[in-house]
Length: 250
Length: 226
Image (cartoon, rainbow over all chains, first blue to last red; front, side):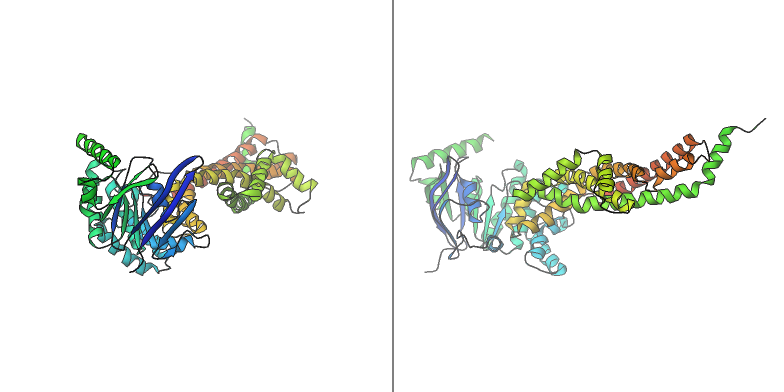
């Protein structure tokens, strides 16, 4: 049996007195799409950021494709080339066009020449349906378009794993759909994704597994059918029904 | 009816315009050299204040506080008569103005660097860029654009403060002007100073307009204007 693509083993993280992650362990295989849900402050984003070491863990181990990436001698830049990240607030490079955003990493990190990088950049913009906006600057794009550029930028590095940190939370409701559609396409293409999101439609239809995180611990972890229809923990049921009520009110 | 005294005095200015233009040349050269020195020292100093740590950061901050807190007149006299850093008045004036400008420019660049949101730096790190590379490729290009208005201000200040080199006898614009009437050749002090002021104004106007153009040229479409 081959190694899981990503494995977290007993990960702890605290900020001062505040314990954010308390012994988180899970595994996902290549091609999996795992969706992390949980109340705000439950440690979802922190867990995601620990995977590409934007946040350093206190103890435990994280393995990517069999390599321990939390060793002190791990080259974080090498790790991050293999793990893409999509941010809640997009974080596009404001001085570069959509194409420039996608090609910067190809040129500066992968060392590609300009022409090759642009050719590949176009392909990735095409993949998110934005090849016609290649020359637009972030300030000229809608929120949904910005996030799609953010996804294309992460995809361009050809990562083994894509992390999504609440990719639709900063969007107007009518713009959520276009981003979710792109994520659905990527899931269908077999790209391995770890997604922090409360888009239940996406979770139901695209997730291999759902991870319910509360108070820094994984309360429940299983396929969507199990969590939605037959949650094992009382907390999971409560949280999901509150989430559904909130969605109906919107 | 005798000719108005005013007429003959303006004639004196016109006769000596070539001398004033030579002084103008010195002023322009001194401004350019000082601003350049100020940029070469001030930009890294601003970056160290934002991204540096430890003794280097403290040293840069202290140097900045001392330079900003000392009158330019004191700096230039100290460098020329006290420390005798150079026998050339031009070199000494460049160092004095350049150091003082570096201290001010460091604050312009510090503010500009800090104004670029952290998220962009994080995004650059997340695609595998090193810290230095991410700062250079993502933060600096935006910070330089945002520093144009502050830089414009600093340029204007340095241009006019070159006149302080008069105390070490450098033949810049104001010195030339003062020598013209102090030599006893004329009583046209007012006319000379008006002409000198006009030249400073033209220089200021032209450089500000050029920097406006630069600002337009590099502005980010759809984005905030610097």
